[in-house]
Image (cartoon, rainbow, N blue to C red):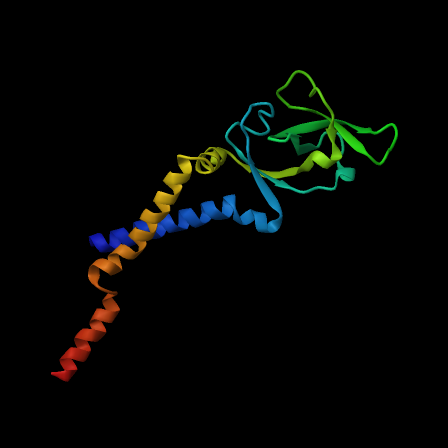
Length: 181
């Protein structure tokens, strides 16, 4: 096997991996699914630290005790915990709040989750992928990802650049030159 062929195989595998990673991290948004990285062990063993969870929007009126929801804890914090109780507002029963608790926590969460803060419910998870997602979303991981993409593009086109075109094109040129002679 030539070095050129080996380089093509490696670059093809790398491109396939990058495409799969892009679909796993970004492409799912087209289906209305958002991704979040599990940063704490509050939901162990259901969702392990470092997992990437995929969350689909849900109608808050369909949420029942025992269901896991992802919600805005405050302006900067997203949490995923299990609903232990649905609490209608005393003044307006159509306004729902949810009492939640992490599976690994001893106590329920300190405050109720307003239905407007519910992002959705997790539909599936990929263990460990959250570490990569979290890393490439912030510097220096962002710079590493951009550099890796540039190197990947270079590896993809390098064999053609080094050989001055594809082998088929060169073969056609050689045949055309020999026919002219």
